Image (cartoon, rainbow, N blue to C red; front, side):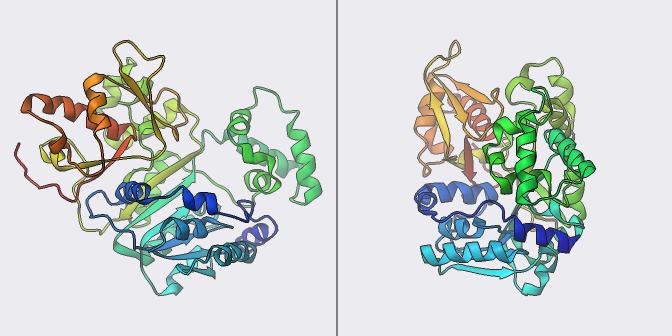
Length: 405
């Protein structure tokens, strides 16, 4: 199976190769890098020179990280020589002296003989014959204080994908150009209420033959529900940190905050909340999480229970917007993260809250932004909500444990 997966990507490199990443380079600046760093290391001072391993780097992912982090040392590995060659072309075109590439399966990562502070593993483990072996291999090369971006498929939103995969297997449809073309033409006749239709509407790259092959004709593909993913993470020697975009999983965000079942959801422990919300939403197609080694030195999580939050420095999350038209009653603005796929995930704010949001500069702590004890509870509610709704991350490196107001 491992050889079959490798051969599949030789024939169908994914994502489709690109020739130029200059627009991507221009989209990253120090502010965006800082927000990304504190998503993974909220308690550590900002650094932009970490060692990064991009697993299953495909045709461009490692090059993108080398562009994103010009002072970092980036290593990309992939089983496909075609993908490595595509990335090598990008390396030469953009002069990426901080990028190294090797043809190597994730299960053999230990052969690198190195450790990495940041591991990027998105869309890889669910294509392995033995995903647990792949995850254990990554545990062996992660630095003790490292962090990993882990993404795997989710089952319920991909129900239509798995129906079509089974359909293709039953008909013996292969991945030749002619068969992929015929499959694309046949899919145009799918019933409008087929479970695959929402995926097709929201995934424009399905029009590309490589994307269609990757989704429907891949020889090895599995998905993880929230409980299965959390168990998978724990069995691999890691612990769950947070969701990359957490609002969709939280019962206090969006429509779930006002349903009659909200009190029942609120009583659950966090993992059970995540699992219940996944079932309620029913259409998640992937899970993206920040995970750490389970033997990592303990760092207090971001929370607002004491007064330490006053030392947090809020940093805006890129791609968030403030809308000031067609507002709900009493709102001065509505905050939206454009990466959210669920339309109920928006945060109305009043005029005083808007003043605080406008004053976020990535330098001042919340305590420096709030004047007077009487406004602290208002600020607490606002900044916790901004965090829940993926509007901000925090630099908590200056927070004083046991701080008193």
